[in-house]
Length: 190
Image (cartoon, rainbow, N blue to C red; front, side, top):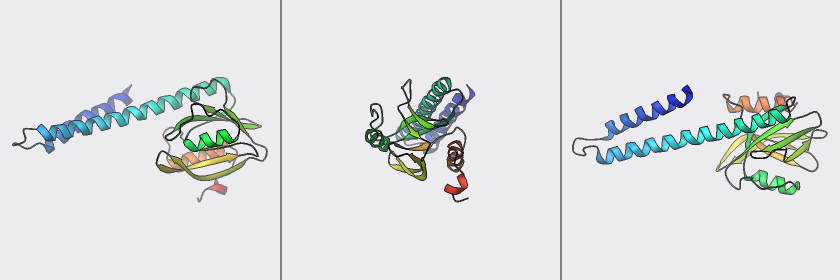
């Protein structure tokens, strides 16, 4: 529970300091306090969204681990491009984001990589490992292009941004490539 207290305490202290620094004697803290409160609200919303996405990712990973205990799980996000990839492969696009992000988990099995979407009880689709192509490329998440990976076979493809907890982007890509059975040195400039 400490991870909730630290950011929350930081927000309260930061908002108080910001409000105190911005207020003047003539102002009596009116406008400056409003700015301080607005900054605190933005910070609180950002942290709440972070914890919401982290919770969704962890919950999906737990579901997938229960269903496929021997599989390697890659937690990740995808954007609206996944919707098009799913439609082209004949998979159901319900629940896939049009614009922002969709929480995914990929299970790496001997013969295929399954695509699990938040809220599903079984895989949405799969990319067959025989002849699977793996490419490191930019993936559009919201309005930002982030380093990601695209895997494809002759009939299905999925582009995603791996999101292992507590690792940087380079380490995430490297680990996902390794989990997919690829040599990271072939795909990344090291």
